[in-house]
Image 1: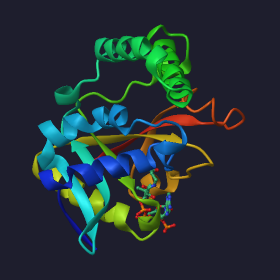
Image 2: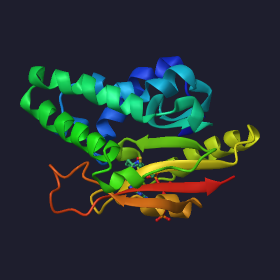
Image 3: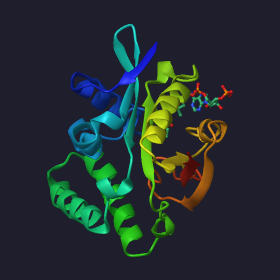
Length: 216
Ligand SMILES: CC(C)(COP(=O)(O)OP(=O)(O)OC[C@H]1O[C@@H](n2cnc3c(N)ncnc32)[C@H](O)[C@@H]1OP(=O)(O)O)[C@@H](O)C(=O)NCCC(=O)NCCS
């Protein structure tokens, strides 16, 4: 297994992994049918900040990725952007099949709840002057230090670019227990809020949205 920088030719496999891990580490196909709607969420990294992205490759196949951003301000997910995205999706709802409609309706509800201050998610404000990462591995690649190696490669790179703080936003739940991964790698919990994001699928599960931070 090797860790290397992302290349344009990795894009379809990275998008595949994003969809295959979207649902709390499980396949997005369990909750939706159109992967393209999900791929939009990682477009920024693959098009605007490729040099901050790393992949893990085993026998020539990309098995995991770390998508990085050195400065949140470059990828500002402003309230307006979320609002626009939600309105756009809202008008698409009648044309979606039931599975997709259920997922996207829940997502829109969550975003509106946060924006209108009706849910705890409104308090989810990551630190200022920070970069951030998304990291995901295919299920068969987990638990073999690959995530730790991807993280190390990115953190060395971020340090060389004089980045002082990195955060990672992650769902904390028994269904996908990854808290240890962040703690073992020197991250600390910065904010933790209750989230309604996966309520439709896990009504009884206590799921928290956590922002982990690490000083470089
Ligand atoms: C979380 C994740 C990136 C960790 O990478 P990994 O290569 O599996 O983890 P490592 O092997 O480097 O292990 C480091 C620590 O993470 C924890 N860990 C190990 N396997 C894990 C798994 N399958 N899932 C979650 N955490 C795991 C352990 O505490 C481990 O330390 P230990 O082996 O001394 O107990 C990876 O498991 C994954 O992609 N999970 C699903 C998606 C996800 O949760 N992404 C992160 C949030 S957006």
